[in-house]
Image (tube, rainbow, N blue to C red; front, side):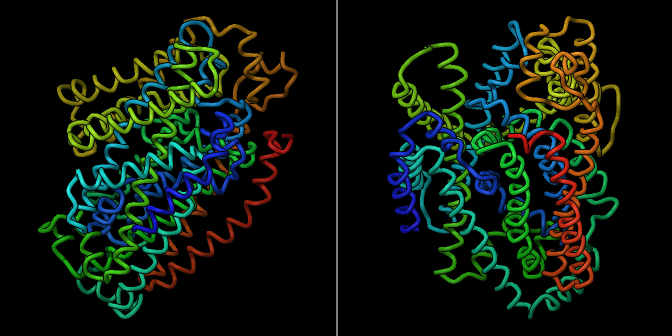
Amino acid sequence: MALYMLFLVGMGLYYRRFAQQSMENYFLGGRKMKGWMSGTSYAVTCMNADVAPAYCGMTVITGTFICWWYLSRFGLALMIGGLLFAACWRRLKIFTSPEFYELRFGGAAAPTMRAWVSMRSAFIAVVAWTGAGLLGLTKVSEALLGWSRFETFLLVIPIILVYVVLSGYMGVVMSDLIQTAIMIGSSLVLMGLVWADFGGPTGLYQALVTQFGEGVVSWHPPMSHELLGVVGIIAWTMGTAIGYGGDVAPMAGAMEGQRLLSCRNSREATRMYVWTEIVLFLMLAVLTLPALGAMVKWPGLHDGSMDKELAYGLLLGHYLPSGLLGLALVAMFASIMSTVDSNMNFGAQVFINDVYRRFIKRGAEMAHYMGVGRVVMLAIMGLSLAVALQAENVIDIAVFMLGLSSAELTANWGQWWWWRFNGKARLAASFGGPIVFLLNKYVVFVHLIDAGQDAAYVIVLSSIAATCLLWIAVALCTKPEPEEKLLAFYKEARPMGWWGPIAQKAGVETGGGAPIMHGLGLALLGAVAVGGGIIGFSGFYVGRWTVALVGGLVALVLGVALRGPYAKYMRRVGVDEE
């Protein structure tokens, strides 16, 4: 652990000179990132403090089909982001994603949306998830090291501040690459130790089937399940995929746009999403599969007589000797610190660019903005500490905000794909959508409609549909954006979809919905390929050789077969021209 902390400080000092040269170097790594670097960094950033106990806790309730949880949440969505939107975002050459709103819209709606998204990202999403990460850090240190919260913060926070403040975004990404290797390595060791305890994959399979039946080693979820049934899988897949990619500063992962915009070109930006999916799913697979051994060792985790989220800690304590336990502990610290450092750097970036430099102080020296950025990082850390000390209520608020923001998802596609979508429609979706969600949650589905046990899914999906109708009506009943604004945006971004009169004036042949459907088809096949690999890997771990073989073949055959269509599609949407 000491070596790891010293390494982070050394990295901060190493990249300090590069970071100080410009704002782009400090916040975007000079826009020189390859897709695999940004994708790996984003994947490890998604691994916040609650992932290990939460996902391992879900594994001991479900079994090997736990993989469908993260396949449904991220599989199709990330592919859509990469194939349909990444190139368009990167073409704009913007410094932060909220700048988009003043390129796409005119009038008061544009600065309103830019300021709102920036403040929402920097001081709601970033603060909430950073606070959650710090809280998770204290849970690990208290349980395994006996440190108090104060002692944990006293050691860790100065180190995070040193390497983030000194090295900027480049230090964040490079440390993320090391943290990924540590996390995967420690999880592979734990997987091997569980295998050794049960006599290999077949022994683990027999132990699971003998104690719990065939259901826990199934490669697919059952039709109905208390935690992960088919209805839930479909709802999660649709709920996360709809609207994805049209906004790269979402409440659940606000730093996504920073990873995309730091890529050296639009082709690498597309690859960023693919790498994110592959690396994230690999990390989640090697993290969750050892928990199958915990089901057998502690049956109370499965039947509910023990707290299921103790599974990960019990595994570490039972299987890992002191040296390897230190490696696992460093991996846990790494995952949490990755989220914290990414949040701080991104939060400072959007506040400086989209609030301070845009509305408060224009035309100042770079050194002034860099200094303010460091102050904002300190402010974010201070607010996040307050969250960590009063976490339950604030995190509940943050999770509630995710529900509020879900209603506007379709507008994220509308603003890219339809020329008639205007600033008033954007405001209707962003501020009217949450009202629709609240009405559904507290009035319609409480007093008027009984949706049964699937009420949570129905509320979100019905809010998405109602908000979609709302912004379409507003767009059709109000004037479109000025033609010169739309023409400038179209020439710069070259979006897909229904831009008929604008595309004609730009002298471009638009394919309408055909490129979108083509991209969605490729995204679906890409998600199936990655999913096949993960399902095959899960089958291999428990000795289900047929599942392992079929899943591996699906991943291999589709992966090879998609290379040609993917390259052709990239040329069709103009990526090779850059």
